Image (tube, rainbow over all chains, first blue to last red; front, side):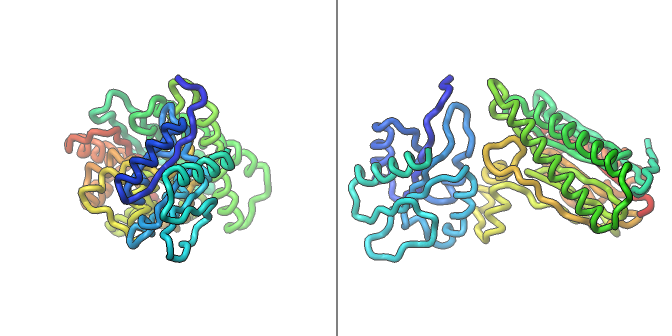
Length: 125
Length: 259
């Protein structure tokens, strides 16, 4: 058993391919990553799982913050112990309310998004 | 067998309890009947987690011990006014739940690393029932044959509905099984408190999910009209078991004889 499991990163991104690519990039960098297409599915990521660390960072694609799913946003955040939030924002829309640690605007490279998540993760530790 | 207990400043009540393992290998539910304290409770050790049995018993014993200590302190002091006394006991229940949470967390090592529990407790003070709960164990009241749920489940499903988001009937079991609060958990363990005025003839049911998920509300309402609390408990658990309930099931019933 790993005595100090790495923290988890939760990705909430509706589009499958960008989510899969970002997950692969973060795993390559040594992180434990969980992906979900929407907020309702993301809620099923448990706060505590055997041999896995706590969720420290949640990346949310702005496209996931739509009615009626957006009503679950506060529930998702409250489910984990003080996670840092990173917003993957649309290019030209206003920023939705939220305690965002980092905001990355589209279009963005997978590496840029991964680095923004890493910065949030370091700040959370 | 009907048991009548004179509890000093407390209401005269008839109480009982029953539990069954269902189709599980062991019973991770625990319950408490402490009429001398006015305290009744059930706890459901988290299903599938090792140590659920330890967590539920730890929660019950910690809470009962705390209430016992506070009762002894109260007996040495001058009796306070009604509202002040209710606040005192509400705080005692919250303190007991928090202490239980800490006790469980302190023991979450090795094979017990994932243990946790729900808790539904009721403390009778004067003519009021103070209800305290964490998780999806429930407290109901029956008055004039009408069954009323006094607690709100701390599950993802209930929280989603409260926000106006219905994941659909097919998704209900998935979200209903995910607790948003539990004692010993990494996340939220805050107890929720409610005050319920008590009248003679009121019946209270405290139960774990294995019981209420196997029975309809109408069935529970009918059985709760049984002539004794113990008979009601036995019938509730037997009927839930006959529905082939998979989970552990526990019922505690308190009948108020005079409020």
